[in-house]
Image (cartoon, rainbow, N blue to C red; front, side):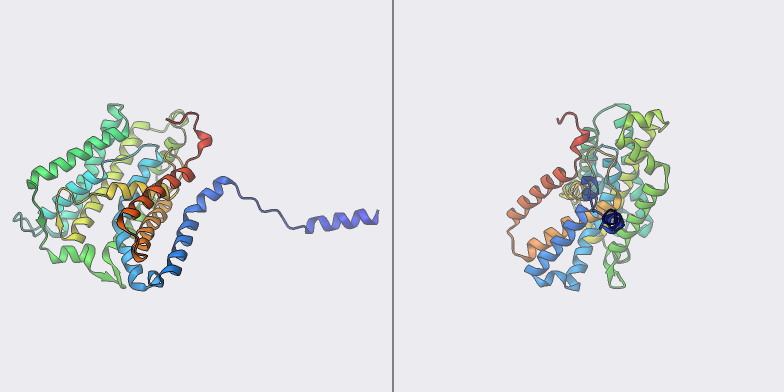
Length: 336
């Protein structure tokens, strides 16, 4: 009996077993990858951790971060927006011709910024409206709208390039530094804050998750499906418009092809950050981590002297690995 009591007393003192589910591991995996990647690159090349290189990383991540804020909302619904490059191009051209430039006589300064962002939001609303009203796949609808935007930008400039001569415009949005950090980085941080508030503190944010989780259930509980889709695409368009403004300010010029490569980076970063292409899983903060992974990897390969053609291959493998890790195959009955 004494032996039995001793065992009973000892049992509560046993160390609890720690268990990690696949879902919890999936949530922290992007952050772990970022930390491990940074550590490995730092070992190979100590210059990676240099303050000047960190500033370069943040500056390189600024525009992609703004773009993925909008892309995240669309992907959380289970849809996809392929018009990013088109919206960036047309808004960059618009803001460039509205400030002091070598193409037109207009000089609206910073007042041109909200105009360009509103144009981006309007194009996003067109994306959402066409997608809802025509009941067409989001990737085809947005791809077509994106091509139309690039075509409009090309036709407006007749293939030319607009050079921005407004130093105050470029300085306030990109070149000037505050606390040693470029203005574009601060703007990107504010964009993240706005996106997080929309996601966590508004009905649209909750409805987007509901659509991505199960649209039929969302419909039954009263979620306005069509309105939510249009609002999500409008939000994405507004962030893409801001990305176009920052692109023009950073480069000091604009043309129809200014946005080449932005779509690849944006979609890659969202998926690498752990947001499921099936919708309903992920967040804007996950996407920030995804951007940092993509930017750190690119910067690290440059520091290590990896050839450019190898870099593209590594980025392709990164996408495959990210999709494999982020996709919850238990929710898929059929893979098409």
